[in-house]
Length: 83
Image (cartoon, rainbow, N blue to C red):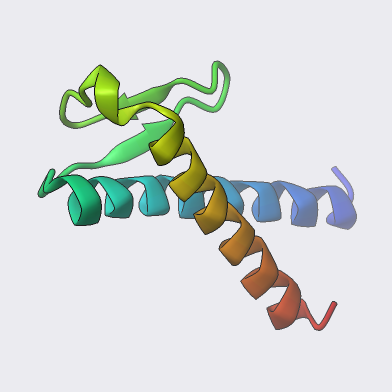
C-alpha cells in the first residue's frame, strides 16, 4: 500500500474511532447510559454496544447528534491539517 493509501486508511480509522467516542458521549450525556462503549463494525456498519441501546434512542435525534459530531470532527481535522 502506498504512503497516501496508508494515510487515508489512518484518517478513516481515526474518523471511525471519533464517531464511536461521540456516539458513546451522546448516550452518556443525553440519556444517562454511564459506562457505555460503542464500536462500529468495520464490515457491516452495525453499532455494537456494551449496553443495550433501546430502539427509541436509535432514532433521528441520535442520528442528527451523531452527524453534528462527525461534521465537527471533520472540521477540526481539516483545521489541524491547514485545509
